[in-house]
Length: 353
Image (cartoon, rainbow, N blue to C red; front, side, top):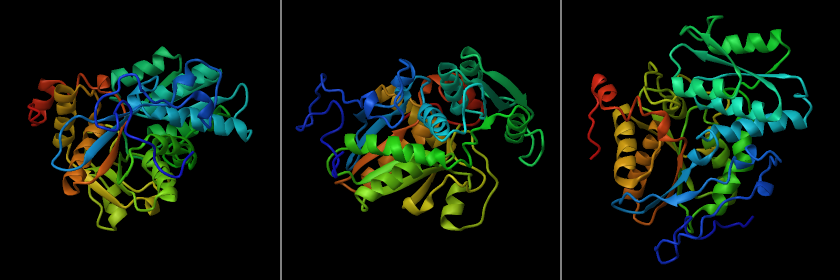
């Protein structure tokens, strides 16, 4: 690994032209979590592409985590945490892996447990999207659907996961508190991004839900180049930004899946993040729709929020070289943000300009 970022983004020549034959990936044996399984070996090594939407200033590269097997960055989290638990003896043959998730982590845990021979149990809140539950069912994990209740209610999906793990002598992943969450991204996603990053990298922009991805990447990049600014992306009505800036909290209310939280989590390493910017639901959705319609880049709402912030940053600094993290694929949101009726029902505009 070098002390400076590599050359231009994948598929981009030094003169700005396209080089179709040069698609950079990270080989499996470069991963800190090597595996002989041909499916799990596809996790990581995701491309960094030049994002083609023009800006008023600097350039943007987009890391496409949608290239992971279940279409999101959570595949890294699932494989990394399970491998770490195996390495220190906390997870052994015959154990049950339990996790609470209303989003992409459910599918990722289901895939990893399927391939590594563990029983998986996923607790989900009522109303979890059929696409995301579909991954769990397809890979053979057990689903426990829980009512939408307050977090301190024993029926809450996180408390249910904790109880099931205790009753069945299983391992609860607990992505919201587990320090292995940001550690996996420090050990894996950060180094991979650093090797792919354009010369003169100035900013990394990353959505924050659990905060693990942004935190792990931030720590790694800051240790190599402290003047790279790391910008976390929060939902507009969320309390990651209020916790970061020490302002009064507000009612958590967002429709962008996987973005924001109602309070600070232990997996948020704020000391490595320079600023947090908030994005409203409509802007996140419209940006994701524009990315697809005008740029051929199919991403979800949290990635739309990250692209929106990356465009702001690039416009503020003409010499900016911004890397934004595209968390997942837009094909999980055809019945929500890409559906005109769904958008209109919520008062959001459906044009993307």
